[in-house]
Image (tube, rainbow, N blue to C red; front, side):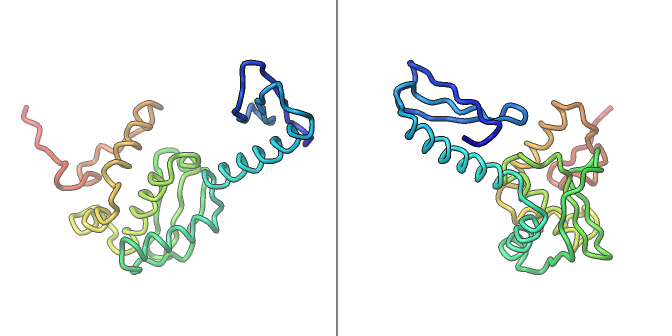
Length: 184
């Protein structure tokens, strides 16, 4: 058995095998009736599945760059080609940033583990900045090519609110159709 694996057998568990991370160990839950050979086979299978799920949820810089190119092709007609795309841990008030002058895109590591469609939205947002630097109508039209843009923005706003993170209140951060005059 690999190190840092805790096996929990249960008489109540009949057919399912599951696993989760608890700090630096993996807890594998099995039916009590399994033989030692079946246990070892299931542990190998479930650890492989867990590792694959974690790889998908925590893409590398290379994976991120590849995904950005695919999103550019699919939603921006391939016109936005970043020089580099990478994760950074020093963005506390932003989900991502882009420097159009040198073509670099950086995404906050806080996005790791969020649904892929949310990370995709942030990538499309930053890719759009390679084509349109500000947050004007042309910019939001490009971002709107991503079908889950509005949903992802809502998700990120909810995460920010729940975590008491600073949220942009500048009017030009919102798409034109979301801006409203406040009487008072």
